[in-house]
Length: 102
Picture 1 (cartoon, rainbow, N blue to C red):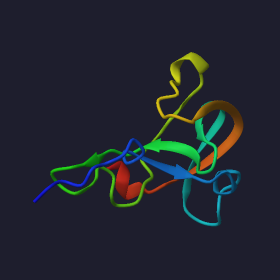
Picture 2: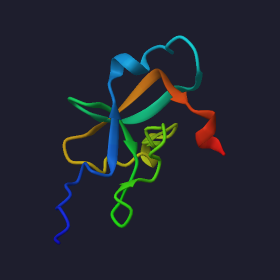
Picture 3: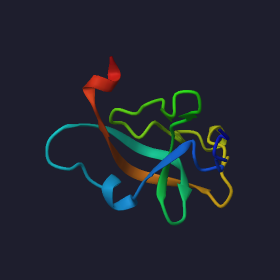
Picture 4: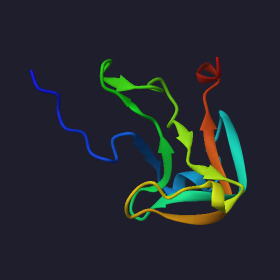
């Protein structure tokens, strides 16, 4: 059995800007203020969530998008994906699932 070929975006998940602009009703959120974000032009904010080949699932499979690709310092955020750019965004809300914090 051959392993399917993965592309460079397989270790990442994305959040559209519309979802990040304000918290939805209910739940807990992490609020990022004036962070530099790695941005995909069509998909939105970039989150690193590696695909674990041997298990056939993501590291954070339960709820979360993964680790946000952002930083308060521009030089600390590296545009690692082709076609992505850096942009400072004043306010971003990312839902946090308490069960993922354990």
